[in-house]
Length: 128
Image (cartoon, rainbow, N blue to C red):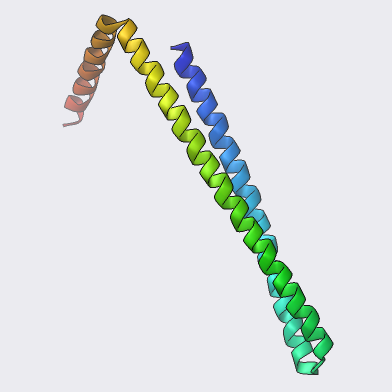
């Protein structure tokens, strides 16, 4: 039981970490969108005034923003793969731990499963 609580706490901490990283990433993307909007606005102003130097600067800024977006996308993909791998490892470890517990205590495991089945059956009977 203590192991199950530990696994739940670990899973919650991992979920919190993923949520925090997702929020940071979302904030960064919003800042990038705002920057791109400002660049587009400035590009329009410069294009109207016909300043070729300004267009070159804007093009450079757009290329820089595209690189930042590509880097951010790569970072997001890497974090996503890492989180998925970590979740798979934790699920595998939990499965192995549960299997070990069942193998060590087969009678208790069968009794617990039967008890849970009985409780679920009684609970569903009251709703029908």
